[in-house]
Length: 190
Image 1 (tube, one colour):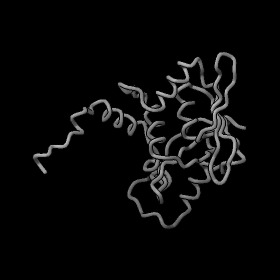
Image 2: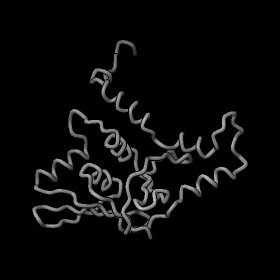
Image 3: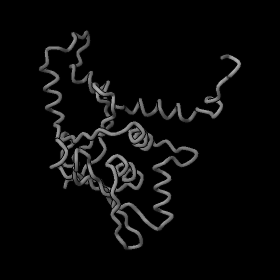
């Protein structure tokens, strides 16, 4: 197993699904993509943005529950694949007793982030993607539209596909300014 960190969340151009990009801590150009759900991606983005919701969201609730039961997440392992589904383990230390909890990788990663726990990956089960290969492949394709600026198509793609710090700040601003009445429906206008 190798240790990985959350590099970013990307969007699959074909399906529109979020992709969790994990990078090897020893070589950040080695990326390991795992397709995840929207809610799970939102949990990661919210955590990475530093936004503190006024009430616990689902992953914060799980963190609070584990802590209330005297536990702490020591590590997360994305360990196996069974019938095209990744299998992850959340390793909890509860007063010296190790408890292994079966989980989806996206849920396990969300908890690892909240506990600042290391994430380990069985690199044999997730197809490795090399960032340099992606850039080279994009630069060598002939189907990219001609652009006026000097950015390569790969640079433009990465700006469009990856959630940036600016995106996170905009998202945080929206969340900070949202009010319950924003969700009320004015029946008189219908």
